[in-house]
Image (cartoon, rainbow, N blue to C red; front, side, top):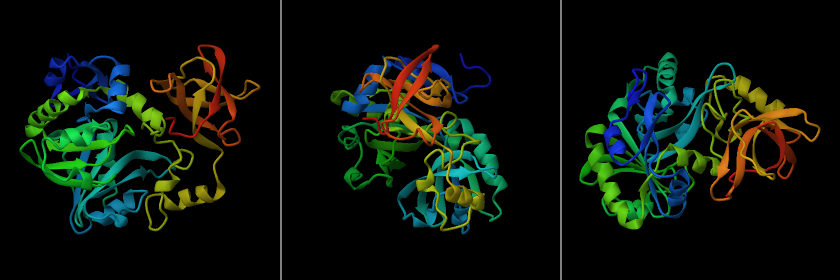
Length: 363
């Protein structure tokens, strides 16, 4: 039963019919799994899996000054985008932290799509509007947009059955607008959150069920399965992808989080001067990946210790890697220890267990 504080994604009843276990996540009821997390994880790595991630937020920014607003809001340089190209970025706040991380899509020179995290939709919308000194036109299309992620090595083979779009021409972080399952005006994007390759598919909610069922039908002979958020989390962790609210937040330094590569000082943006100084002075801690040596599963919040038992950080994301069959995680660790191969310890249920720093991806 949906509580008053939880929103329904448009295909909720379909997921229940497919056996999806629905759990609260980021203000929505979402399918966490249909069968078993491990089975769903491996089907994405080896064949293909279909996620419904329609809880994500989508904003349109358009008009003659659309790029000006995005350049001011975004850490990355959106002027480098060609039509049909996307880029990863974050929204810096005025205190040195991160409002959110997002993907910016250039539809054309005066129209952009911003895709933001589900739990931050209202916060991001309010922030973007508060910074809109350029008069750009803004529209929140989150409630009318469904987003499906078809991920895995067989994604192209499956999707090509129901679209005439040349999927081979869609490079990583590029997209095309095409027809899928007879539905026009669908965005097919060469993006994803699993490291397994594939596509993210944006469709109006009125056509969502038709497209979702067509992908299921096309993928079933190839062994594709619907996949929930449980496997999505272990898949992104094996790649070392940040999760907002765990690994980055309003108080996280983007340089400590390893996001210097999408911080472009070729233009002015929110809090650029402070971030420039931080880049020059360096950081005292870094978001680092690690693998467990001793048997144990690290979880968010667990202390990270040095060889003397001193706390030097904490786990922000951790789990058992299905591919490696050992515990992996990420956490903020003092810079001196954040060196690949360095032995650290993670306190798991009161026991100090050995681990070593490992630069992601883990597989």
